[in-house]
Amino acid sequence: MKLLDRYILKQFLGAFVFTVLIIVSVILVIDITEKTEKFVKAQVSTEQIVGYYLDFIPWIANFITPLTVFIATVFITSKLAGRTEIIAILSSGVSFKRMLLPYLVGSVLIAVVSFVLTGWIIPNSNKTKRAFELQYLKSKFYFDQSNVHMQVAEGKYLYIRSYNNQADVGYNFTLERVDSTKLLEKLEASRITWNEEKQKWTLSNWTVHTFDGKDETIDKGRTMDTTLAIHPSEFENLERSYEGMTIPELNEEIEKLTLRGAGNVEFYQVEKYTRFTSPFAVLI
Image 1 (cartoon, rainbow, N blue to C red):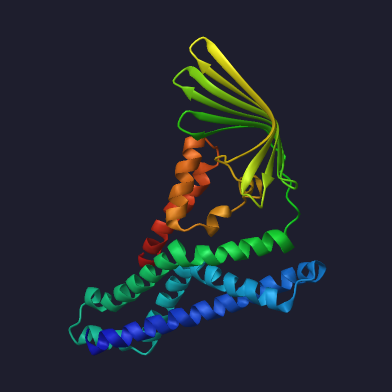
Image 2: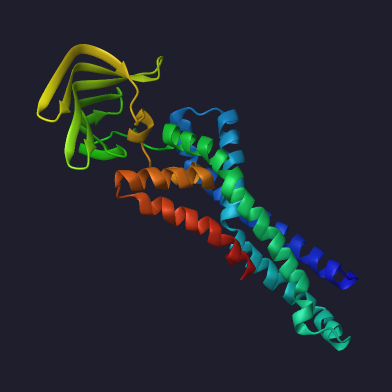
């Protein structure tokens, strides 16, 4: 890389960092002003607020990266033009396309770093940021859906009439195992309760129907601990939960939701594709 390339690249990256700091600072001040009342009402400590904004800053800085790259490009180019440096560069025999090389190198560096951040690093900090927002900034969430149907595995279908996410209790539970069009097994329970200590579900007043051709075997019991392909976290507030998922986690979630036939799978797909396309926005 020639001296001219290093000079333009240094100017470009410096302008980018400066632009990010300025815009993030403005956003930070506005955000703190808007949320101060909520912090006071929730009695959030200063340490917790600082931790929240340490997670917030990388997220917002990466979010505005395509815009800040554009601003930095315009700023540094106009600065070079104002000092008639572009005229001198072109007069020395350097073509306009060749002069764009340091811009391209700088944008590729920013795009690669941005992709790594948004794909693996920032989602982990978003987990704690989102947990803070759900606890202190948003209203308590109540799961109000009824008659929940889902496919939890190949040939296994789950049904819950209603679920109380505050007590982690589900009512009128059914789990069916099907082979093509034949019902092989049906597990019913009047109630399922999450046991945090055992990390298992406790089934109350359960009945298991096992079918072998025309023969049916019935087993009953009062309580039974078992592992199911669902977790209480799936009945919590899932608004923008994809922001706290790395790309491998997004792939797993999309695969799981597709299997269950969930209607919100497109939100996770859009998030995944956005993470792959945003670095190209930086290049453009």
